[in-house]
Length: 112
Image 1 (tube, rainbow, N blue to C red):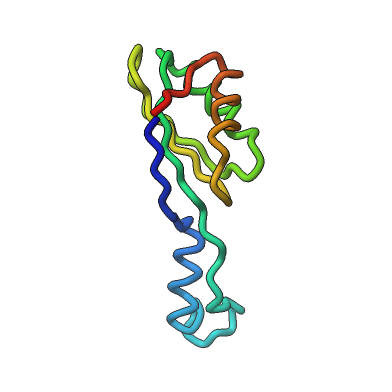
Image 2 (cartoon, rainbow, N blue to C red; image 1 turned 45 degrees about the horizontal axis):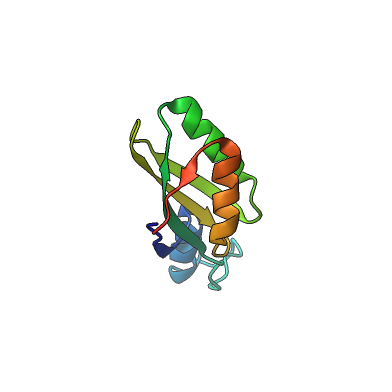
């Protein structure tokens, strides 16, 4: 199973950080933007077998989105092949939880 973990910032976090470094949105610091960084998201990438269409993507996305801490799901569909699923969450997800969610949707998480 392919599993990559990388740290991402949301566009809002990146903008707030840039504004804070510049002294705030107006340069005077009056907007209350602090220089403290917001927590980052963790992205994990998995491979899934069995998806063939947009409905499959929706099913997997819905099940994974129901896991605690999940902030986003991105599926690169390879119809009839191995699709790549990237899940962004506030902390790393347990592979067992991801496997169960993918299975509940009717598909197979590919083992390493």
